[in-house]
Length: 409
Image (cartoon, rainbow, N blue to C red):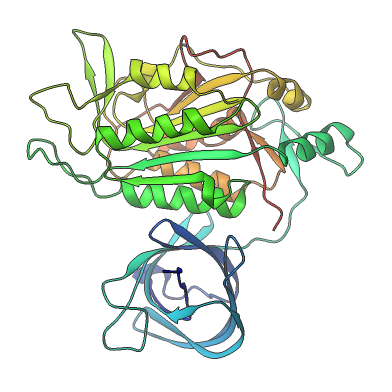
């Protein structure tokens, strides 16, 4: 059955301290339905407790799209927006009720939460739900590339920059694959369930498909997978990814370190504390990362003891060398900590997403991305976690780097 584009009715729950925020402006982001992502854009105008505006929504394959006028009212910190009139529509659409939380962090505003069908309304079917993430769109800034340090001057990529334009053109011909894993629930009652990994995984998938050149059909989101499911997904990538392609692997869930074996592990949903047979070791991951025939592979792990897969800290070069680091094969890892525990509510993923969304440069290396948010993670972590970035040992890294390519929007 063909998927349905879900739009038109929104309820936004704001924190008390943010109730006076003026929502006038443009909000962009995504909603999810199963593994489908829909691009959203709201143009809102607030006058007192009244809101009017327009909604634009489309699936990433652009087969389903809609534009509608919206109106709403603010009562007791809750903003209710509903479709007023459909201006145009292609494909299928239904109304959905959404509850989002307003977040204000370092001057950046976000609306995030879930949508669902409602039996009381003529909406999408009840029990159907997904996530919604919106960001206030900021004024267009000059495209820049960070130099040797975050506080250093920036260099504008001008239209006549032949190297930059050539690399953007070349990367546009390559495929970007992503395997995104989030595990909240564990079968073993001795392993504590988590609250946030699946939501983190879904938000990352939305950011990559909306802001960067990750096509939806090449992004695989696994929710509460078993070890067998992860291995199967890695096997599929082994057969699918070519030497011209780029691959990002993300994991959020429990991690564990075995002192006797000097080995780190991911814990799939069917892991048991009584046996390692269903654990996924760093050595297995290293073998897959080395065996998948990509040009560049970036492993991002938001789990306890995830730093054990790294060989050493990498040092990036100046911005003009982006072309050179793309030429060299890379197998890099970005982790939320070293060999210590990390909290369930991850500041690592918070600042990772924030920097991916706020980036305006057409080309962003993984090293640049990491340096932009590392200090923020250290300063805002409740247990002083120190994120790490560097080559994966014995996986075929030749000194290159993963390059994110901004999507033309």
